Length: 184
Image (cartoon, rainbow, N blue to C red; front, side, top):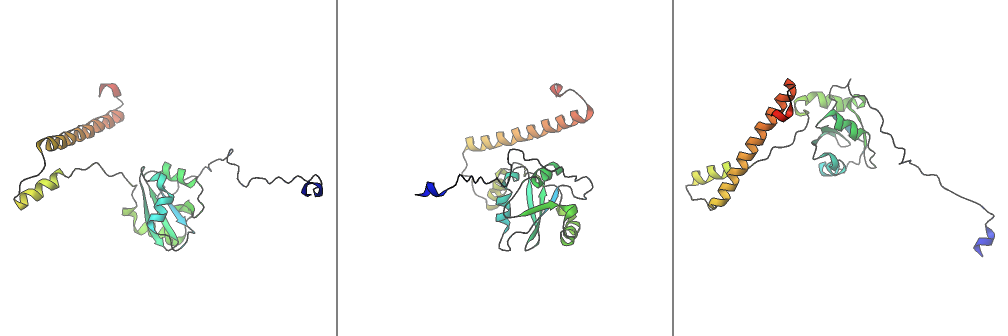
């Protein structure tokens, strides 16, 4: 009988991590030359760009890119220092991360050498194949197989995008000028 052999022993294993009281460390990136860049290190040599992008997939829509240093070091380029600080506060099982100010010499040298390519990542603007289609069709001298309604819908989409871009520019200017947003 198993229960008779136990002498009222209680064995409670304490948790390794306290997820309820998790606090993101306050990392000061103000003294860093590139506050939107972090070093990703100590991952398996077999890792490829896709693997690192998968680990940081939550930041991809906000703007995130990878620049390789060597087989086990890479630079993570974020769209803003705030996003980089957020990423530094998260835990990953397969990789380690740290601010560029604490990075290896090789990572810092790579960052300085490629400074122009380490500008904050930006989302690619909406595009349309209309111009390319027109150029190809006119160069080949063939008629378009696109219907009139499809062409009009594409033109309408382009007009709306242009108008949205103008409105955003006006709003940005109004913010800088201190004007009321509702007037724009």
